[in-house]
Structures are given as C-alpha cells and as structure tokens.
Image (cartoon, rainbow, N blue to C red; front, top):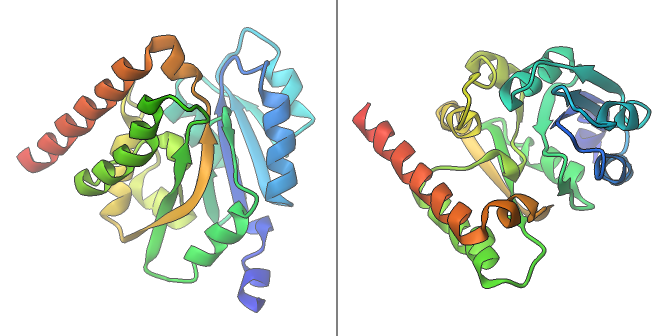
Length: 225
C-alpha cells in the first residue's frame, strides 16, 4: 500500500469537458467527488447557454471557460491541471466506486502509458449489449476506442503526443491511436456507466452502426499510412 500512498489521488487530475449539462452536472460532480476522493476535478465549459458553469463552479477544484470543441476543452483543462495522471471523463458518466484505486494499480507497471474503462449503458435493449459487450471485443481487434471509455494517461505522455488533436470529429480516436503507439494500454474491467441519451436522440442502431463504420475507416487509414 506504500506505492498507493505515494501515488495519492492528489497527483491525479480529472478533466471534464462540458456543454449545456445543467440537468446532470450537479449530480455527476457530487458522485464523482464521493468516489474520487481528493483527486483534482477540473470542469471546462465550452460556452454553455444554460447554468452549467454556475452549477459546476462550487463542486470542482477548477471551473474554466474555453472555446467550444471537446478537444480544445480537454486541452485547456490539461494545461491547468496539476496532476501527473490525467483522466478524461464525459459529464454524462457514472464512475465505479473503485475507480481511483484501479487506475493507481495499473500504473504500477512502468510500461503502461494509459488506458480506459469498459462501459455499460443502463438499458435492457439488445442494441446496447452490442455497444458495451460485442463492440468491446471488436475494439480490441481493431485497436480502436472512443472517449466515452474514460481515457487516462501519464501527463508526460499526453505532452509528448501534443494533447488531443483539435479536429471537429474523431479527436478521441486519433488521440487513442497515438497513445497506443507510446506503450502498453491498460483495460480496466470495472464499468463506467454511460448515458444512453445520445443514442436515443440519434437512434441506437443508427449510431452504433455509424461508430462501427468510423472505426473501420480509421483502421483502413492506418494501414494506408
């Protein structure tokens, strides 16, 4: 347990990009604080038109404003962060109770540069089991992952990569591609609970198939390079 003491939650920064999350941000941050202990929590608002910034401000260590765009927001949070480990979370996520301990455990291995959690969407609909189960194994084969899996990495590796590429789409997939080129990627089996709202808005089958096509095209481009 000595190593865990050295690798205390004080050296971990949790960076949350947010946009118009007033309906959920308060509960999210209260749950996150309860499970993340003294880890530094940074919320980066991308110009919300609701009360997201005001609601988050008193429930995190830093609440910043940034130009809209998830990559820009996460990079802004990383610049302000004090931790040696960065953990990037979406604001519609519920983290597992053992999240900090699990991240600390994987970094016992000096070859690990970062990693991600498995996810679960809280719905009984069959399409979501494809998303959080079958898609997980497809992602292993394709060596592809998206940001809803809660990427975490060493600060030094993040800076070596240059942060998230400021792309309008797929910034998370490109960041993950570069991250896995730097060393070993850890997969934490504890599940992040990810909201189904985006799937429900667009259509669960449509969005699941779209993600699959994007992953295949990205892998194809990797081979082309």
